[in-house]
Length: 245
Image (cartoon, rainbow, N blue to C red):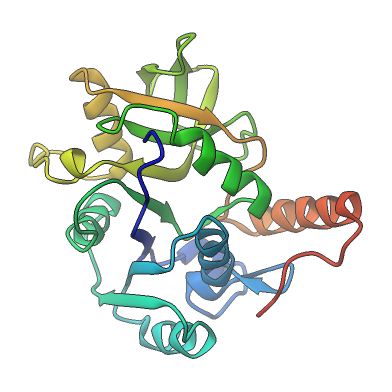
């Protein structure tokens, strides 16, 4: 991105969270707490730490209360909510992408739990790539039953995405240039991961930035893993952990 400012961010939070609900959490997925902090608040806190205060967030039609909670907790932010139950993660991605204006933008799924310091490092590293490139956070921490494997060359460019193995796995955080946000994918693609695979296969410049600790919070064990990491990092930093807002 070569220092170009990132004026807007997008958060994909329209998933049903059915596995977490089955595990005993009655609230919408964005409100699932990790170390006392709802996932949506954690991601917003990361965006703010990276200097992004203008956001577009998609929630499903059961997410009205979540939208009201965010507005009350973050009154200083410019937040636009899209309330829509989408058919797929790719549809959610495209709905948010239309709200992000010109230039590159940061997008994240709400369930990509990442320590704030590592999130900011990802942003800094991503700025070193060409402004027309898409940049994905990738992680060596494989805690997903269906990981999306990534292989990288020496420059960090993704050479393979979606194979049976690889160097790392995708981590749910993306720098998306305006050029990519304007691409209409083939109609047969149903999921965001399929879209990312398609971009790489067609030769688009897509790069990966290694981010050590990112947990895709889909299951009860993912919540437990993220909380373990949060406690460990808090001990290492000598502080109480992140602000529960």
